[in-house]
Image (cartoon, rainbow, N blue to C red; front, side, top):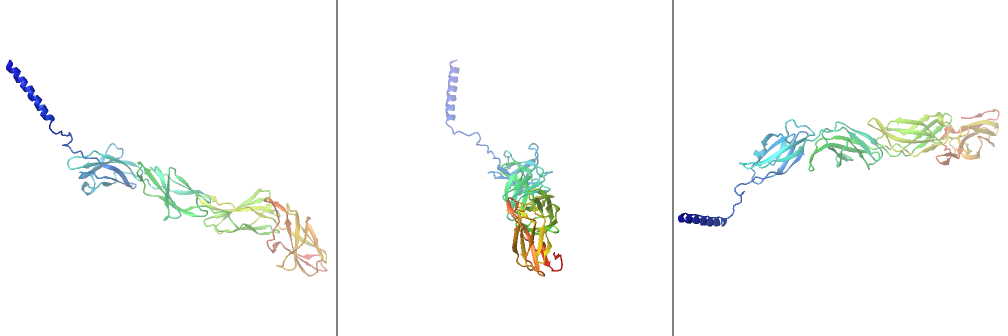
Length: 419
């Protein structure tokens, strides 16, 4: 009995000494015998086409190869293979089976060191959308242009590249809609525009490849200058208006005719880039003051886009004069009153193309010119004065000789020769 007790005491003492010995040995970390292969880092898309992508990543220390696979739903992965160069490349150019433009896909990459694989990393990628099928300029003024295009399937936005020419064009913005208004432009100018549909599924990259272009995005012309009444034959009522044609991209011109009271009476549209005048006969302005203005137009998407209006110009007719013999040294000039005229001034010249001198001013629509000589040439015209139009009092302007009246008195003839 006593012997058994002694044996048990000796075993307890040994166990205590052994435990103390183990506590004095160097500690061993649990993972010291197992090397964990790190997963690839910074896996991201760097290139896209409509059917392919490139994914690259940082090299993993200790890796001898990389294996990839791909998926359209991030659930089922297929096509597992080594990267190029025997698996040593840290990028892949991948065109998955049945990949389509403007879609999202997933690429899984693992490192391999000859015995084991790392954890997988997944890169979300996108194929580039197809270019819009059409592009149309839909509006413009002399400082802006609006362009729209057909939607591209799968596009999350559209990159706008714009400039004076294709060579100088720059990426200026990304829009979410299928149209853009370009502002701050020069009048009567042409610009280059390209629209690239993009698909963006990460913050670091957007997929884009092809574009739709318009090398002739136009602004309208500035206000027409040099508008004037070129001629007005008051007998036949044939009127000709003229202006300076300096526009580069117009398709035609529009003219509006207003009465003195600002009532629109006629609109003329003149097709042709070289137009610089308009001749017309308009009953509503016969022997009547009128106002007029002109602007350019350019066809865009089948619609007219108009330039700025010119300032209003004003036309006041000379009086339509007739002459009757009073005596061998006097003729009576008479005319139809010009609406709104305060009075009239009679002018006379003694040879064709000669200088006209003022004879008299009268409020009546007739005046007898005396102290004339027989068998002598005389030329007369009558100016209407003080017509209220456009907020001012204005006079008619002598345009050419067609409204002058020629008088030739003969002693034994009661008529006078006139034309």
